[in-house]
Image: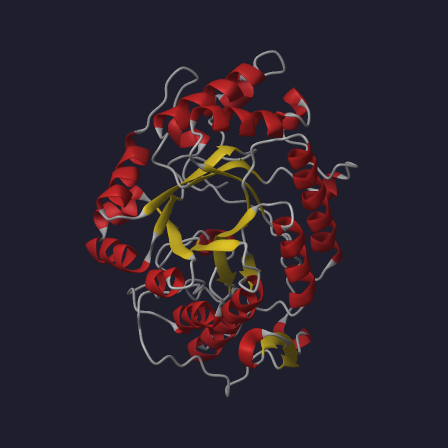
Length: 388
C-alpha cells in the first residue's frame, strides 16, 4: 500500500480504461475555439506552433488569468533548476502535501507548520500567490485520526483545525480549498454526498460549518469548494455535475461564505467522450451563482497511449488545448493550475503508471524541464482566451 503520509492523491480511477484500438476519435477545437469537430486520436497534421515563448504566467496574466502549479518543499529545495522554472512560469503556488492534515497534525495536540511556512515564504519572496489545499478532506488524515476522532469530538477537532490553520496563514492566502471531494455518486445518497468520516460524525452541515469557520479567521481569502470527476460526457460525470450544482446552490441559499469552485481537471489522453458544450453549460451554471472558477489540479494521464513519444505528446497536447479552449470560454474562470510542473515529479507515476514501464508524460515540462507540446497547448489556449 502507498505511504498515506507521502502520497496524497486518490487511489481509485473513476473511469474504466479501454484499449487504443477501441478509440477512434477525439474532440478538437476549430479556429477561434468556438466549435468542435471529430478527428482521429492522433492527428499528425495538427501542430502546436507558437511565435513567442513568453512564460505561461505572463500569457495568462495578459488575459486576467492566474497560472501556476502544485509543488513541494523538498522539490524546490533540492532542485534549483525547478525552483527557477517555477518562479519564471508560475504566478501562484499550491502545496502538494504540506497543508494537508497528515503533514500539519503529527499528533492530536500539535501542529507543525514548518514545511508550509517554507513554501509560503518562497512564494512571498518571489512575488507568487499562495493557495491553501486543503482544510477538510476524507483522505490524507493522520494515522491517529481513526482511533481518536469520533462523533463526540469530531466537531471540536474540525473547528480547532480550521481555526488554527487559517489563523496561522491569515492574510497570506489567495484561496483555500476549504472542502475537497465531498461528493460521491457511487454512494447513492439523494444529496450526492460522500460517506466520509466527516459526514458520518457531523452530518451534511459539516461543509457549511467549515466555510463559516474559515471565513471568520481569514476574511480576505477566497474560499473554494474543490472536486473531481466532472469533465466528460458520461453518466457518472453528468450525475456528479448535477450533485455539485445542488450542493453549491444549497450553500449559497444559506448564505454560506463560499466564493469559488475548483474543478480539478485530471484528464485522460485516450478519452474521446468530451462534450465542450455540456461542460461550458455546467461552468456557466456555477458562474451564475456568483462564484469564481479555478482549474485546480490539471494534468493529462497517458497510460493508455502509444509508447512513441511524438505520438503520445501530440495526443496529450491536444487534450490540454481542447479542454482549456472550452473551459476558458467561461469568463468566471480566473485561474489554471497544473498538478505539478515537470514529468520528473508527478503523482501519476505511481497511481497511473504505464504497463510498458515507460515514464509517464502528463505535464507541461519534461523530466529535464524542457517545455513540451503540452506547454505549447496551454500557451495557445491562454493566447486565444478572451480577457477576464
